[in-house]
Image (cartoon, rainbow, N blue to C red; front, side, top):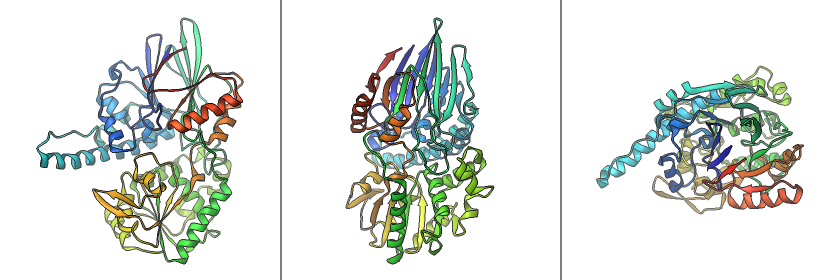
Length: 462
C-alpha cells in the first residue's frame, strides 16, 4: 500500500493525494492551486501521474482548492467515478461551472496580451462546458454509510463540519489479506460554528492525513468576534460609510447571512441595504436551503422552513452584471457581500476599485487569505493594491475578523485528535510551513504518535 502527496503538501491549496493498493489507484482530492499568478500557473502543468490509470476519485468537499482540477483530470483522460457527499455534488455542479467560466475569461485576457506581443495563444485549462460534462462522473454518497467502490477499497464519509457536505474520508484498504484504515480529515470545521454540525469524532486509524491550516494559532472567542462585527457596523454607520465583505461563495456567505438574521436587531441591520452580489453565492445559498436536513439543531430550529431571504427583509440578490454595476453608485448605507473570498477575481474586485480609495469605506475580511492574493495584501496592511494593472490607494478601513474561520484552530484540531483510541501515524497536510512546524510540535508535546510534515512528491508505504 502506497500513498503519494501531490498537492497541499507544504502549502494550503491544490489538494491531491494518490493511494495505490492491490492494483487499484484512487485519487483523494484534485484541487486547483490558488495564490499568486506564479502559483496558479502550475495548474496548467500535466499531472504527475497518468489520469487514465486512476480507478476512482474521492472528494472530501466542493471548495475549488479540493475539487477545481477534476474537469481538467477528465479532460486529460480520466473516465472513472468521482465519489462525494450528495450536497457536495450539488455544490460542485455550480462551482466547477463557475471555475470553468473563469478559466475561459482568464485565457481570453491572456491571449489579448499575447496577440499584441506576437506570442502563441493559450487554451483555457477547462471550460464551463467541460465542467458540465465532468458532473456526469459524480456519484453521490451519504454520511456514515460505507460503500465498496473497488474490490479492495471501502469508503465511508463522515461530517467534517466545514461547509455543507464536507467530509472526513475513511478508507479501508485490503491487500494480501491485510486491511489498513486511512483517514483523511478533509477540512475540519470549528466546533460551534453556525448552521453546521460539529466534526464527527473518529476513534481509529492506521494512517491519518490531518489538515493544518490553523495549526499554529487559536481563533478568537466567537462572542468577541460578533462584538467586532457589531463595532464595524456602528463605526461605518456613524460615518455614513459603505461596507464591502469579500466572502467565499460556499460556506462563509451562508454563515454571514445566518449571523445577520440572528443579530438583525442587535446589530442595527435595519439601517442598511444588504446586497448579495454573487450569482455563484446565490446559487450556493439555494443549495444550502435544499439540504437543510444537514443543519445543526440550532440552525434547523431558527430557520424552520424559511429561507435566508425570508429572515432578512432588506437582503437583495443581484444576479446580473448590470445590477452589480449599479451598486458602484452607492457610497453609503450598503453592505455588499461578493466573491471571490481572497479578492483574486469576481465582482469584489470591481467594488474594491470603486471604493477602496474612499476614506469612509470599510472592508471586512472574513476568511483565509493565501499569500500572494489581493486579500492577503489588504490584511497585511498594504497602502495600495494592484487591480487590472492599475495601482489603487487603500484609504478604506480594513477589518480582519479572524473568528469566523470555517477551519478548526489548533485547539479544535488537538481536541478532535484526542478522541482517537489508537495512535495512527500522522501526516500533516494543507498548511503553510510555519503552521505545519508549530502544529507538529504541539502534537508531539501531547501525544506519542509519529508525526510527519508531508512534502510534495513524498511517498509512504503502510
